[in-house]
Image (cartoon, rainbow, N blue to C red; front, side, top):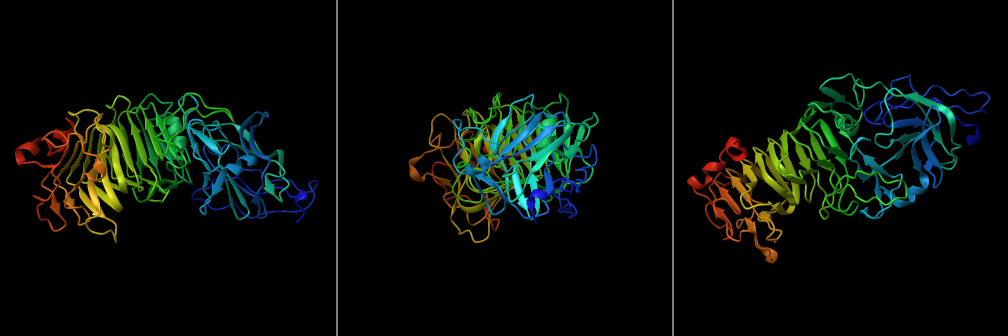
Length: 497
């Protein structure tokens, strides 16, 4: 096939969960080929990925641009193939940075600024392009497309090896109208819904001053997320095994726990604030509710901090409520501040995989699953009187093959600037939990060095996998409470009062 005469003839459609467009490639000169419409007017979502059937297998080039324009010629998005040199493509198609992204890094078109245009933005690495057979999949940057607006796509010659490109105006589409006013919006990978990505829905919610629910249909949503300055928002999946947020991220790719920025850098400009290593970064949000959702950081290596969520409350008084969810990673899975309640959920990891600076974080009726030799908790509670991390009627389990005596309940960061306030109440602990319980290896003593009834490393009514009470053998820095000392910690109402 002579690529000088190739024109696109298939529709743009979304990437996740839908059928691929009909094969309809044509050859011949451009005087005889009339490209078909990209999409029916007004049916393309503002956060949708574009799948373009090129009619032939292609490879990424090393120069040239793939761009999106408004119908009046205003460029709204651009992907520069020269920036491909800065990433590595994993076997699953995800593009990861070759060098750690720090505050001093330069912005490229293979990074995204998550969030609403009117609010703070989170700078992250992302995957703008994929190739699937004859299809080129283009994921526009966050918040670049507007509702009820006509656009066209161009592809420069050289952006794809062996492909002659697409000229201005050849492939056009129009986005859907703005969702009707209300308190509920929907996300689904296909079919009728307001958005195709969870971030698209979050961008919309960040512009609302009223309580809102985002209903997430079944599907795997391959994206990192950012939410800021919201109150009374609920994100509700179909069920935790069906509605999944999944993407790889870690300290080696994004430096630190991260934060948003009020100023989005220009291309090649200094980032200023990088978005950190979590999948979901939440800042300054009160009464956020997560229900029936799995968040998985698919980085996949034991070494390397890789949070699923960072709930960051600057005041340490914002509330997070979690019901029937799963957070799956390895190191640093769940990071929080504020007042958090996690019920009937799974938290899985292996090294300090529950940690942070909360006033109080209560896990009730949860499974705490260790995946490799390591430590469950590292508390950095800001004040001695803060209740910190409390586990009420939880099951401490281990993945198959994990040896007995290989998991510590907690280890300390070793600083006098915060407190190691951790309490297990009525928890069943598998054989992988070490008999000594609390780790003092490495010379880092907890603060306080010996627990009291109200502060430090404590437990009450712990039992082993056979249901036998654990009454002795713990490290001396920990304390087994008596019934009177444990009385303030026996219910959610008492703990979160």
